[in-house]
Image 1 (tube, rainbow, N blue to C red):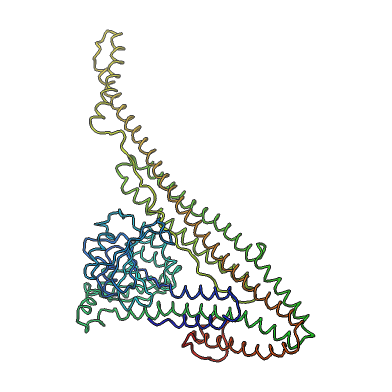
Image 2 (cartoon, rainbow, N blue to C red; image 1 turned 180 degrees about the vertical axis):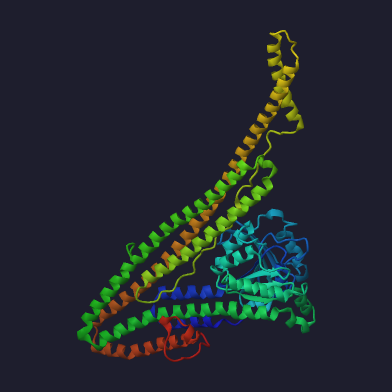
Length: 627
């Protein structure tokens, strides 16, 4: 496969700067090259259960990769990417044979028609209930041109909006996604959870599209589509709505290409090509232009300083003083007292405190409401399934909302750090690791055990015990006045005390069950708070390390360039006239080569889309070769 133009541009830059012996700048370009080659464009396919997500993925890729039976629901995410031969990879968390800390088991001897049946054994609720295999996700590789450019399509479990465990897991994956396709069938208009999920997704992902499926099954789909567009407009959600029929598309795949346009998939493919792959390609081109221009600018500045020192030997001392001041400022950027370092350290500390307080406040409110429901609801074992389900939904919603807020604050902090690092120039942000694991599903299950049964036999025994005491006590009192032990008064007292004993025993057992229920609720909420809090702290530490390493490296490169320029200027004082004349002939040639490289690299991005720091007059030459 031909290398992308961005990779060719990096190769061209590497060959051009190799003569200067700047290993640090070469390493920066090699890292950019590796990032371009390994980069994938992830598209998350999300939606409620049984909306046609898996069938949509199959129809889009023209391959039966995801199981689509009527009674099967997806329970584990499926990532579909490009491979020369069909392959299946099971990914489990916590392994040690992968840089990401994951354990992988790969199979490649699978025929494409059988792939869906094999995958069903791992990703469906029927054959892998509650993810009994302990999978993080499943990766599938198939030979499809639509995936060759790096596209990865991720079929996720039904989300149920933010108020579901699957929704929390999907929300955690949003920051790493390049696009989100929200799937909803044409049987009804958008629900409140779907709109809530869209509002959250559009703040974390650059591209969100709404896919209306099963248009072949519902004649009123156009009316539903119009209602959905109205809901999106009312909610202020700028998302394109595309109506498709996976069944009609599958007919086109099987040979009837005349119905392909009717299926609506050409429009979806155009959206992925132009808005998703096209946008990702633009971002990679912009980052390539920025990296190459930043590297060559440092070399050009050094050459111009050297040229100035040779042309004006009398003014070289002023140049040396200027370079020393610049080097001092560059060296200050590496100090822990630098403004960007203080902003980063203080910002992460404040953000950790704010995120933890927000999470605990949300969880305390859920615990309070749940305990009030337990107190007011009588015996919790009778309504425990409904109550525990409500608690899990509320906890998942709180965790997702807290994580969403933490991610937004982390990105805002990154912008502040970039501004303080480069107050007088543009500085690109590094790729930030803001993806967290779904900690809600890792919490222990809430259970209330019936340690003391309260059936008819226990009630009769408690009543008999209380009645016996009543009959005996009042019967003895009656014998003092000449009545028999068993008399109407003693029998009545026995009945009253028997009923009271039953009532007291019931209240005691219910109170004990309520206490156990509250303990189970607090334990569950504490587990989730602990896990989510750790994930948030880990995410913020990753952001801190990424920003610290990125800008420390940039500061070191700038300091090295200024140090070289200063050394060259000081050396020029001791050079002979012949050496000076020779360098004055060589420097313009080297500058012309670097400026030519910059002009060619700028053609990767249209002038209107270039960052301000890399805009230039003229189109330059297109990048066509690495030589």
